[in-house]
Image 1 (cartoon, helix red, strand yellow):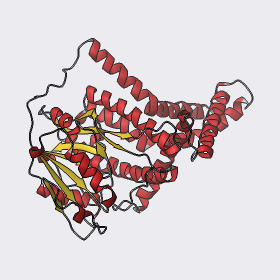
Image 2 (tube, rainbow, N blue to C red):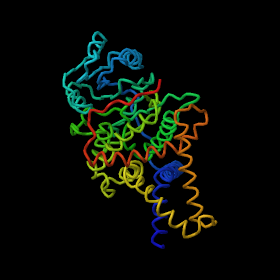
Image 3 (tube, rainbow, N blue to C red):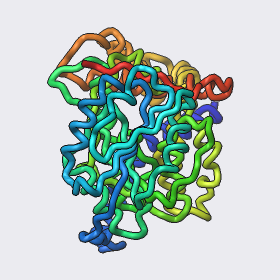
Image 4 (cartoon, one colour):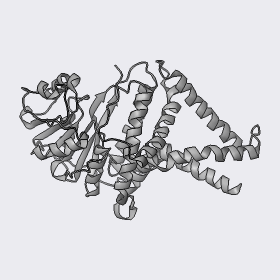
Length: 396
């Protein structure tokens, strides 16, 4: 019984640290550093205004071409300094034809479909500018996004800049939209603190940029191209910075089924990334970057979901030993755990009903997130996740 008690506290600590504790610790460190004026504010060169390439890897995106190009051509940056490249490998819906005639825009097309990372590896051969900005076809960028991203590259230590992914926030929403929106708001705050401490640990594929010279061809079976590209830049000694006012906006997944499908893909890619970036686990070599990487990413994609699963039988046995109806510590934790899963069940019941009380969906979305890691692990082990991902359906 003593062994089970020790395991319970270990599991509980890992779970709380992963989802709440790291954020609290990060906030405390930032506050202390600010108070004692430890570390320097990121110095940038405001006159830095190079040519940039906006790089869009697309597969059958004809429904988004007009809106994407209208948005792109309205961005606040010298028009003659924005080169637009679309790589449309495998597209057979007319996407390449629709792109003809737009200014400063080139289209590189192959009939064969080799996945997004195949298109990115091939397309990078055509990038001649010092900065390349990656964006998805189905997202619109904030008007000042390119300007704000370039500003951060005014510091030579910055190798990558991550923009913010924003989910369209409706007054009332279903589970997928409410959960995804709240998750990204929390993630945005963590990224701000990560960047202030040292470096963000990974960029969002909807909008991120790197110095072109730092791009390394990524393995053709890579599932999380944005994560691998950005973390390898950090491995090379540069920092990943973050500006939430450089943003890409899109609608949430159409429903929880679509969100789960997306999360499973990401989880399989996350586990693949941990294996390929295992040298980053060496805190003696990478220091603060390793601490941030393990705390913010590795635990979420590996140990913590396992702890959540194992906590159920461990706590059940401990509560039974206390007496389920007693006021013993483990009995109280048992009922709190049961209440949490009951709330997740309520979220499942309400998942397709719009509500303004979005907090109801937090337990359900949390459950879906961790379920996706478990399912993603098995998909990775079976090697059944194709690089040719099917885009999740988005809410209207």
